[in-house]
Image 1 (cartoon, one colour):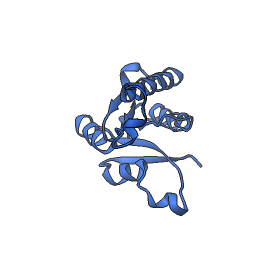
Image 2 (tube, helix red, strand yellow; image 1 turned 90 degrees about the vertical axis):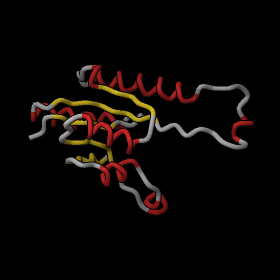
Image 3 (cartoon, helix red, strand yellow; image 1 turned 60 degrees about the horizontal axis):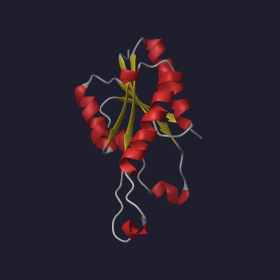
Length: 142
């Protein structure tokens, strides 16, 4: 049924559960599994810049940490390093690009249930759900 699965990972321990579920599905269907993390860097503006004592390459540091974590996940779940990507950009744009470039049959993402004020803010899984042009599996992390 599925031939290509794209697993969106965050930089937290919950991602292991998401990747484990995606890996299980890829093995059941004999599908290629690819990992993707998008570094959504928001530059500092205004007075926050004055609080920095020295220029810090924040974007490069975030990307470096992401690459290390995704490489660790790849090794832990026996996923080819070439099938794991870390990119800078906007999650929605990167997802749409990946969906256009390759025949992705299924997108796997982690999902936290939210209530109260947290439910009012836009979250990655909501964005993916509304933009995804293929099947999607939201792995419950609660």
